Image (cartoon, rainbow over the protein chains, first blue to last red):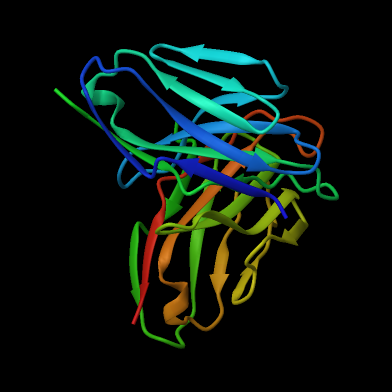
Length: 112
Length: 115
């Protein structure tokens, strides 16, 4: 059974204080690992897809990396507008299904 | 530029009532799915569709029904509401079917309370 574990559950940072969020996964035949951002009362917003170990992707202050067992979302010099819940998900082949298995998320708060 | 539209945004049901959550997308996406989000449990797949006329069950399908008569619409029906179905429901869509991944576009959600 595919499993995704995110840590920490919650993280409070000061503006400009860089940190990393962790996503550990157990899946047979990883097809892709995905990061989403979710603001309160809204649906998740797609950030990145990573396909193979060693891959990195960047978007503004965010950089996602992937190893064979985990992914990190690095946040450099965060701003208050980066406050959100960050979700990690994995996709593995399942007889044609494109379903994602999601972690429970890391709730990030950036204080000015 | 609507994307994925879900209605209603909020709903309160009594146990045993039925209702339909609506989902419509205007991006001509083949793949559509329904997830529920509960505190501490992440998003869980209820049902999905890879195209008009084709649906299949996800991880937690019991108590829910879907149909896909058009590419644009993918309604979710609660047959007989139970308190355990209190949750936030998200509809999502994406291009392609099984061969490639383009990233899901999510709706803004329906917050359902069953009393």
